[in-house]
Image (spheres, rainbow, N blue to C red):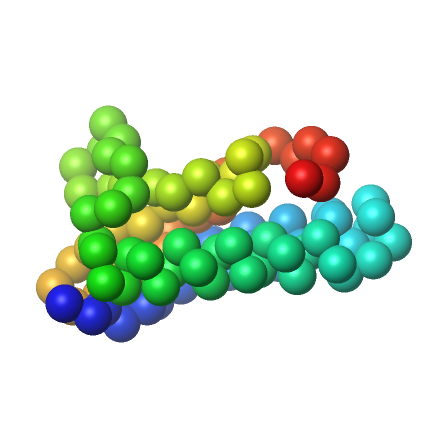
Length: 94
């Protein structure tokens, strides 16, 4: 089952905040681009395998770990995958 992807406003802001942080910290967009590729890869997996993420204590909410220090949270409803947050802590690029 292929899902449509929907980013909540909150998750969009999280994503921008993470990229801006790394662009400023490294004075380059290289690491942000790497994170973006990792996020895109996880999204493609979730589109095909919605339950591939790890479950949380919130009913219906799952997550994937991105680049060892961020969690990409999502919820599946009908034929949609809603990305609801990117949470984590920055560390050195890896």
